[in-house]
Image 1 (tube, rainbow, N blue to C red):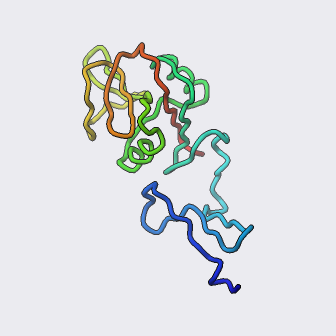
Image 2 (tube, rainbow, N blue to C red):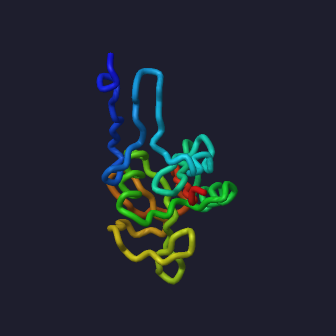
Length: 158
């Protein structure tokens, strides 16, 4: 077997940017990561997912919006702030049909704000008429903040 026979590039449905690879298998038993040696991949705990410069934690438990935000805060994060189409696609693929809290809340003054304090600029369609936003594989909507849902935390990867 020559080197051309055992080299196959791993593909992903996570819509990586053109030319970006998740990894490359050169031969059985040899895995070569395409992550640059100077990057700090370990900046996220094992149960967090690294994508586009952020660490994400997708919960297995359910809590109301406030308790979910408190959980994220204890881990140096916030409920997920989604600021790109790539991040949205990535998260929708990971959560499936299950509803997950994200860090978007309708404040008392009727203004939607992210959990990091930034105003929501309506760059995606948000349905529903309640005060706390959730995401699943098909939509971003809102429901009562007291409802117990899974959640997504996010923080910058270091």
